[in-house]
Length: 254
Image (cartoon, rainbow, N blue to C red):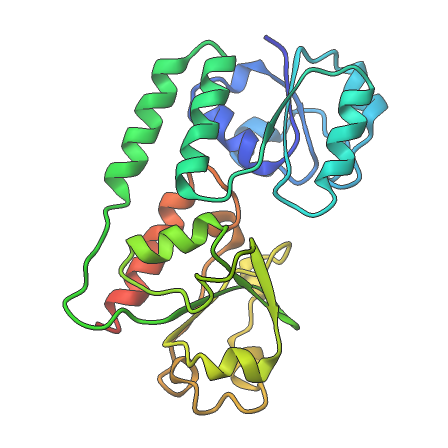
């Protein structure tokens, strides 16, 4: 099968299933595994995909998603061009597992999909802390602060890792926050996972300098952590590493 992958997470799922050889191209944001994507044709960033270039690759299947605002337009353009698509829109960890299974089935390796899901489950056990669950702010953007909400797999990861998401009851994928409103929830931990920013450029001083945040426990106790968006923002196999880093941050508070 000839497969084009539009979105990083789908590329990583295909490779984790041992099907990298099916890929005939990827979007320009797919950067992992580097040894696989380095030589593949890239047809533009995920929200600026060159549909004609995708067509020239003659894929039998396009793996795409609705995980980023604006993706629905790209999906519509792919389908209008007559391309066969498999569309992912995970909003929970179970949804991520379901997408892995669907992609594995489409590639004819259903058993590998089940095995990958089982490996991820074992690697991300649910932790029941003895005391109060630390309050964890996972922020996708610093200004305005955009926090993961209930309809995000990250909400599940926080719970599994022994923490509590102050915005876990908000019925949305994410929620933009005024600085005062975010501070009022008094997070014990801030996890910077800024979308589209290299982790080397995450700056804890931006969090510390927020007006009115000096008494926020995460700031007062120096619990501001950089966790790459590649480990929390991509609904695929590397969520395991995001879980591990969340768990380490939470364990340090317990």
